[in-house]
Length: 160
Image 1 (cartoon, helix red, strand yellow):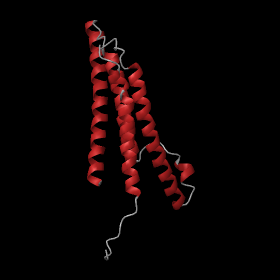
Image 2 (cartoon, helix red, strand yellow; image 1 turned 180 degrees about the vertical axis):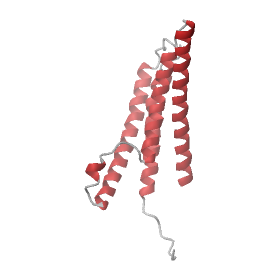
Image 3 (spheres, one colour; image 1 turned 90 degrees about the horizontal axis):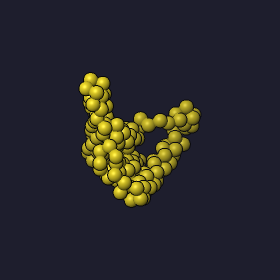
Image 4 (cartoon, helix red, strand yellow; image 1 turned 120 degrees about the vertical axis):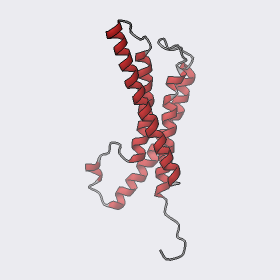
């Protein structure tokens, strides 16, 4: 299971990094085109915006899986370790539920408004709006990995 989690973590990191690279490249190209050649790239802002949305979705799941998301540690650290573990399980369950809500809401949103064509790049808005569903799915998988890691280990009956 650890190999699958590590592979998923690498995938999220790669997709997040690629999204940020696209944002940087498109904004740079748009700026150079606009200010050096006085010929703005009409599609650059739209592509950068959608790449940011995808990067945020992948980065959200990656940060959660890494345990580097924002927490109220000053509050949580005041409790004994047993209670902190229960908080952790509660957070993982809540994250799993939130991921499911994002998947569902994203599908509804994309179904209702996905047929609109993006003015700058001419593709259906579905491809931008489905990012919420993809991000929710990534969060679901990340929460599942965290919940599985909390399971008590089965004893083999022998001495370690």
